[in-house]
Image 1 (tube, rainbow, N blue to C red):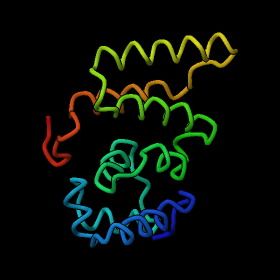
Image 2: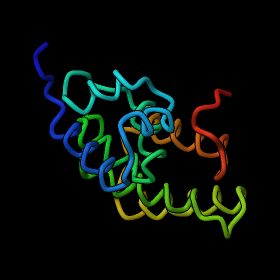
Image 3: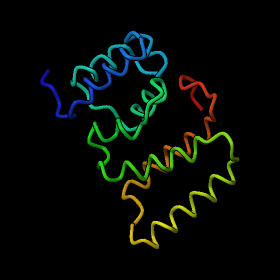
Image 4: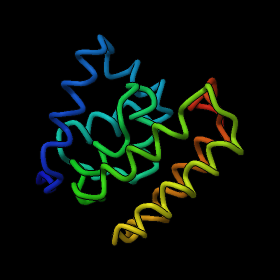
Length: 144
């Protein structure tokens, strides 16, 4: 099977997995994907969905947006906006209502300064809703 053009996503995932001192099987279990499927992703034989990348990112405790860029799902320029949103959403010191208000203020400043919201708004919104639904201590293997 020929390798897909998914940048260096597989190599990057392998490096992150090894630096986290996880076996392929451990990461697959933590991310809720099969061991062979994760192996194929690392070898560049499969291109994972944004949802799978998000699960893997959570298991590795890294930015899902970085994986989206490496997989060609997200443009590098839009990553900063999404990472800012992710940091706000992940902050345990503020409640959900405060997070939403802060995000609205952030968006209004961006618009005021001539920046449109990301064309990947649906991707960000789905990531946010997954984060909000899961909560900080959710098990990524459990289905809703």
